[in-house]
Length: 437
Image (cartoon, rainbow, N blue to C red):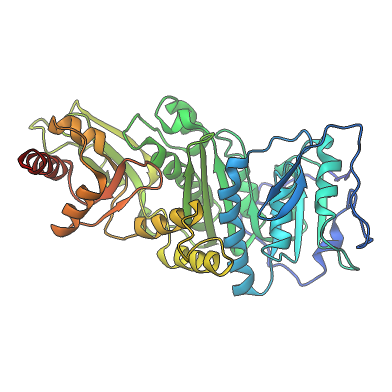
């Protein structure tokens, strides 16, 4: 087991990243176990319960670690982003801070061709399964991977103090634990990638506003597009922490999956602060008319809904501060889609879940689209008609000049710059046309 010497942090240790020096970074780690004989095969303890899995052609053992097949798409996205970084920068060093059985680390090594991966897990019982899974990767004089067994924050802080920075840090955490953000940002290279996670659906649904306030600095109330709020509060939390450290973060893609649920966001971190709090503000929803609005910090105290004559709208609820800007970078998502097609993971009429997801993300990244999404069931309820076909609604919106796309977050919902009143009008028109036929 790795032994790390505790250090006393000065009150200024997190203010900025020192300029890293060129050196052999990989030799800094005590490797728990590594198989150097490339001809030998990993052996598994027959006395322990082992369960072999296969993902993208890679065979691995999960042992007694926590593992979800459903999270494979999130791992696909991370690998695609890592591979693009390697192609762009020519080098890739990854820190898998909460590696579990090590499948993410293995995929970064083999599929993204990472030069080095530090796989860390706090559970010492996972030592054998991690090292034996990673031993499938050949190791020469310059090891391509190492395993540490310690608290993630401690590892990242040690890396920061050693001036040992990473190109990509993957934090697949549980719940709404945002305590990793500060140490992760400090251990990351400038222009590096930070892949963060939340699995707290109760908080994004507005059921634990005090929890979201403590974890992400946002007071979240119940809104129809709560799962998108989960992504926005995660990004907003990272924006807040990065700003304190003198950095700015930009979301490259944001992914939601109902199992868990899982909220995953890939962020690019650079020097500088968010200008004028742009894309970091408040979101409102009116229970009366169903409209949503975005408010800046300067507009606090002047929030009201146009459907109300009163200065104080009792039907208006507000969440924030949150990230109110784009969830995806159009160019970046397009590059990911092209790479997925190159690898045979998408395109050519494959119809795979990843293919559909990336194409939906490209459509969602239309700069004309505002935050949130409109559920067609809510439109139907307000219009007092049957729920209209999604394709028909989108076609009508586009004919009228509105931007519209499907939402990868909610299957029976659309993202559009058309107001709720406009959607209700269209739903009634479609109902009348259907009745006339």
